[in-house]
Length: 388
Image 1: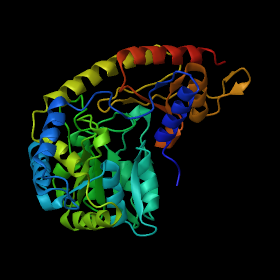
Image 2: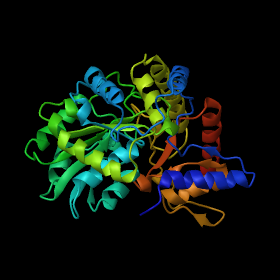
Image 3: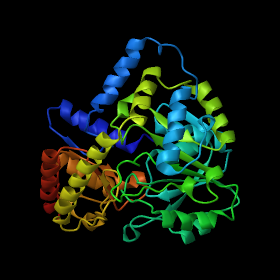
């Protein structure tokens, strides 16, 4: 199994810092906000009650699962009962549970590419085979119904994608999801795994869920969690809404691997999901401001081609114009070389697009301060100008 490229680059940046070299890290999908105060305070109050120190149910406390069920209905028009919810140690474990419950050796999962780095590793870990369908920058990195139809085989067990997307920031509209669903109506045994972890960082004004499309409810697993929209990465709370048979299987898998998510983290998640969403909206407004800032700065760099992300907090620029160029005898052959060159010569850490399924691109996170973003892109521009 390959190491996560995002974590590997973050580790490399820490190595540089340990040597006294100050690195601006734009490699991790880590909100730079603190968990909102009301969530902190509500969690402290739960600790003071003294009732949440024992093992919770494997799939999560009933009141939290009911709150997630209510959230799905209220915000996404999804009808999952509390029994169809499984709370896990982050959305990453949620996806792992689904893959291990769903796949037999040789089963195929269609992966919309570019994709989040861990999808393929988790599919392979479960014995499956990822089948990539590529959306290019010219189509806003989105896969079309025609591409999906041509990728489905008699071994296809599932499809996985994220919207808003990590790494591209692209967002599927309801109409686009309906187009994909129209292909799937002829393949009733194919399960859709819809990763919606960036739901609250969405600049379109309307988040669309595959499970809310007519005919898709009973064959869609909706992945979500607290990390991104609530700045709760370290709390490690992810969850799924799934067909009951699959939720039961995930509960069984999780019961053998880790048992329940932290009891205290679950109390924090309950506070977040039953409180005012204004702090999340405020964070999203700030991310939008940064997106516009970064878009303007990137557009000033010759040879860097970007789409306009409509969600999440990433840019995924095409940097292939720099392949084949050199500095001091070192040639840039691909995006991995370029990321290392930028780390060495600009002290900015990024992630190669190769890890996300597009070797022409690099991923840049703008979950950082305006000061760091301006300085990082200034350094990148300066370093790229040295290549010839």
